[in-house]
Image 1 (cartoon, rainbow, N blue to C red):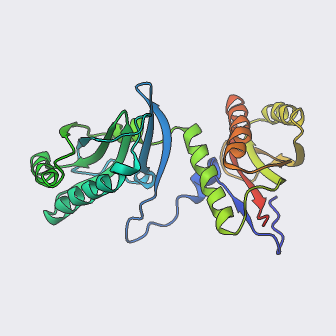
Image 2: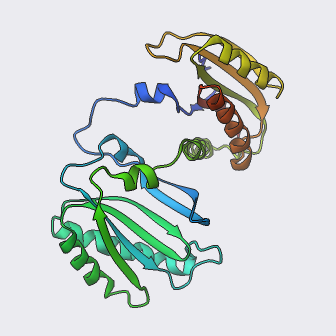
Image 3: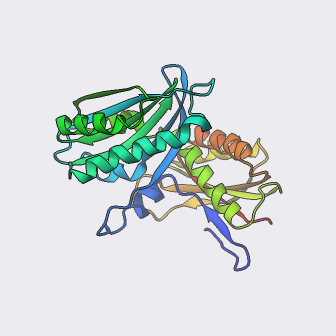
Length: 280
């Protein structure tokens, strides 16, 4: 159903069941992390969360049954509680020194993510020996007297701190994937200023749900390009492809893709991504 013209370079974002099918590729000999960041709301505070998305495929890791946190108070946070340029370099150095200490001592651990919020930078690890980790953190922080810190840990055999806190929710994942596609467009020379046709794919379990979605998108001036049954061996038996002339700036793309994503979710469907051409 997806047609790619030879002289138009396109990018597609896979989100729904196709990502579940094709994402399970043959395991590589070496683990490949996939770090990203997104904004969230933690305890009613604007927060930035960074995490390794690929850990979802290997977690929980045997032997690493404790979640460990290092909470660092930033001396010069922004008014919104996030990190300032003034503190940024030192925060990265702190992280590097702590991790180097863990590696030097061959500790059994995984760096799972970081939270920046309310004037603090919190680092999260899953580990085996919390006593040695605390010793290494205390040693590392002596080189940064302007940064107060706290160390803590608790049992978390199921890695709920990763799955339920660090890992993005579906709506946040959509925004992350939007950003990644836009970054690829920019690498191709796109200024993201020109309107162009943007294609979307959405999958449903029933024809009735697809029909309801099509009525909704027609009212928003989307055109139906293709629709019908799929050949995939799963519950999503129906697919619709729609398009509209739109801007693809960072704000614009989130506005209408999230609207499509939400409507698809309301109808038990899967918004599976979007595609467009590079416009230089």
